[in-house]
Length: 221
Image 1 (cartoon, rainbow, N blue to C red):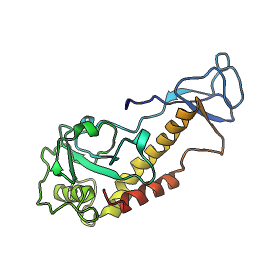
Image 2 (image 1 turned 45 degrees about the horizontal axis):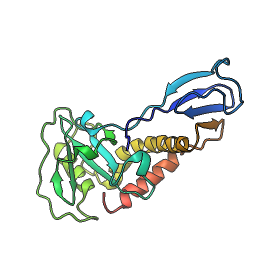
Image 3 (image 1 turned 90 degrees about the vertical axis):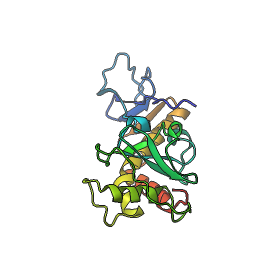
Image 4 (image 1 turned 180 degrees about the vertical axis):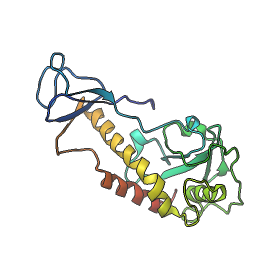
């Protein structure tokens, strides 16, 4: 499956709204005008792609679906998996196999949260108990890692799954949910018109609730 950025383009021709597409069509889907001759109210620009390869984002917390990828497989009830990258972009993750760093191939479309000091060269290796879905999982690993590292960007004293998700996971996953919504719509149609005051893209609060509820309650985090 091709996991390269799809290159979604956003543009605006008339006052009726914005349009999204993979390529610029010949006519405006909202007013029908010929785009070859008519000026655009807003020139086309590429919508920022929210996903990265973990190897390209050293010293970050990285997030991906437990199975599959975000664009094609992720659903509201899908499990999320997280890990941390070192200064060379190597991913350390904790799952049923224990703590390991040999899964780079599965981290090619993930979200990154850069909250770890760039001076970090090693990953703490605390004594781990047997992996148990509801007690010892990848979130447990990342939170214990942050407590050991004590990055200056935030307080780790009262850090828990809920506060961690609210502060760092929800913002990046909310943005990703909007991009996924547009991408999947464009797979079904060539152009996605978004009229003024009527958006089919997930509103921020809806996206936050979907991701936060899933991230905190799923068992394979």
